[in-house]
Length: 224
Image (cartoon, rainbow, N blue to C red; front, side, top):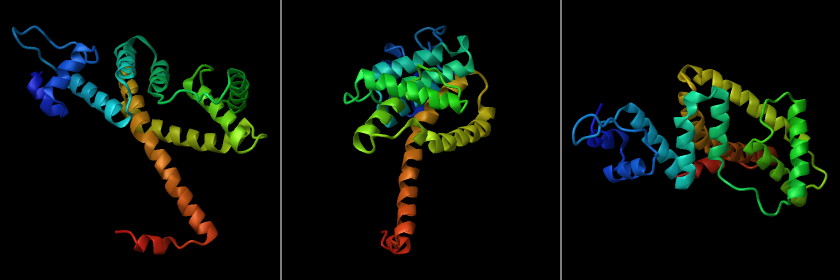
């Protein structure tokens, strides 16, 4: 147990921010047994690091951060799989584009779910990612190829499933309970998804240069 000053030092969070997060209900209750002083523990450090990632890295507004914190606070009452699904939904960054009508979204969503079912992928029909993938399919049809189907996603889905299996296996020892799984899923989504996108861009540049004859070595030598 340690004081708010200790907590500030360990979490690298200003005391004013700690008090603000406490007022907003984002932190677990402190130990108030000692007179005129509240005491904190490692759970508060972990929560503050999570809030920093959600606010500074993911750029989530306070109400979304509060929703995630509440999901974590209630994690002990739910199964690990359900908690992970809930926090992944809550971390979603964007709304479905307005260029997609409800009718288009409904039809595309049905097609995406059929593709996932055919691949024996276990996912909730109402998962946020399913809705966003359906919206992406509609946008692809409007801008790239009108006849594109959800089957175009299969190679990427297979690659992502293989990556997810590896991630879960490598990090399985860190999942002690539903709460630790919730923390892991939240930070994994916030911190690792940008890495995957950036690696995809690097790989695409690399393969394009190799395929069309650009000199990757020449580009490398120009780097400062």
